[in-house]
Length: 336
Figure 1 (cartoon, rainbow, N blue to C red):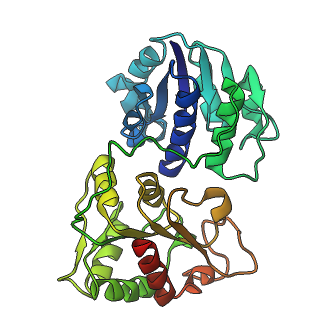
Figure 2 (cartoon, rainbow, N blue to C red):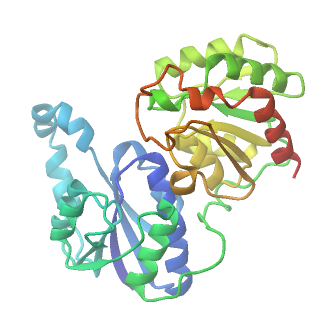
């Protein structure tokens, strides 16, 4: 059995994008077993995949905010012991950042990653002992599948991406909610106008039951405002774990989401998704799975990849996606 350490710390969508590469590797090399180093907020996800033997959580974001308290609690010390518990046949930095490359140097094993032209932060490649070239213009999920195929020496599969989650989160025949809406995102420029969400919610509530998912207090406020258009048919979700969210998403007929992690999670569990994209390029970072309908807004500057739109608030590119068109797309996805 070969033991591999994976480094893919965040974010939610990026972590999910690595799962199909694991499925590919397991198909061609059943003897591979993976440990996975990941930010503590996403530590549930790697354990969902059958090839992952051990999850090593790290809390770089929190340690940066609370350095002295973290050391006093002994958290970095415990992480150090955990990463040194095994010697690995390979240490793969699937993030391509300087911080992830440094984390790889802490482990025992030959370090692999993207080459200088392929990595998101080229300086990270100075810390790898083996490097692979992968086209940066490809989708992030496809790039990871190519990287693993090159490292482990098998042909790139032509089969659709397999996240390895179908047994853990099976599709439900009698869902509690017909549709799930995910209006929240960390980038202000990715927000679909609140009035559009309210119109869509009213259309959906006339035909079925709707669940609104949120992550922050600001998103909770937005969700309550959307639910107010038809409170008897629309519910705001309770705060729960990622596993609970995945279970709910797997049970829905369809999902509408902006470019955000839970939208990628819906795709990973096989739920039809209508994705609303503005400043980001769905061809490079869009949700990947069966029955994905990715709608791109309209603006001459797209994809601008700006967290704050320089033109207006809300972003005019997303204002150009009318709720009636989104509702029609959701109905088509749910029935196909």
